[in-house]
Length: 345
Image 1 (cartoon, rainbow, N blue to C red):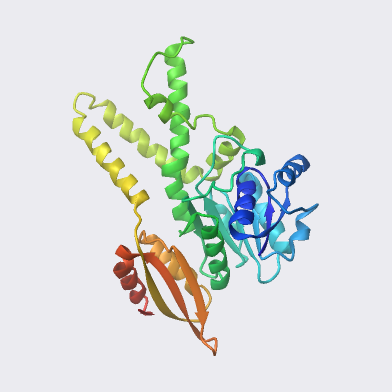
Image 2: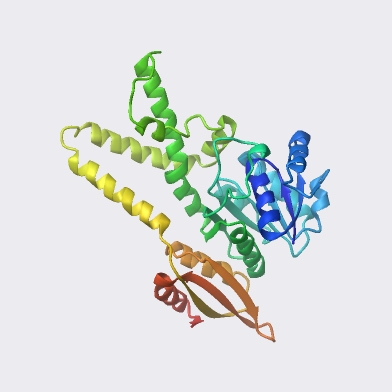
């Protein structure tokens, strides 16, 4: 497999390292910063540096990595050189604007929920994505074979590919990623003002834990806040209302505190659930978007597809989509598929 990584910072460099080590892929790399490209070559992240994205025309997969504000241009440049059977994806933290602006069916938006407090290819790691959720945002016209290729590629890097609609992605990430960064910044500013230059008092780890991401990569996060302003604004409005409610009930918050503990346990249990897998074989018509439709239907129900394969019939009019899901979710997944009028075994 030959892939191109367009942007070889922390994420792009880690994709390149993982693709080489885990998948045996040949990795071509390009970056607008010649120093970053030299560093990526020197640390073994890429097999061959490119002087321009135009040299990626014979790659099966082109991955665009870089600041959120540059992704739309980068994706269009990749699509302009990609072959008709190539898949183009990105790693941006916001998806709605990019997906809606890119109508080419070869593009499938992506977002690995992984990173570090450091940046740059010098800090890239082949294991960065191990066990991490990697969101994929197919559209109704997404080609099933391209989606399968990208799904297998992401799983091959050690991540867990998870289909989600682009607007839902931005709503969820506003709550679980973007809002925590805003609140971490607020807590640091609040403590700094309260201490007035005094030394930090001896405390437990709660302040450090809650503010670990404060001030992270200002340029990158300013772009994320701007790109996802609507969804983040909704979350902030809800937090402000909650804080006002808490302010008015400071003498009677035991139940509220206990409820938070229960909710946190539920969230963590949902994140770490695992176990055996079950195989579902779905007989489908050969029409555009059928695979994306299945993936998004299960994703909306919280059912993750751990692996998939496509097998067309000899006349190419129908085919079988084989899906592997958690065994405990197999019955529910089968029922959802059957509701679409498809045969599943």
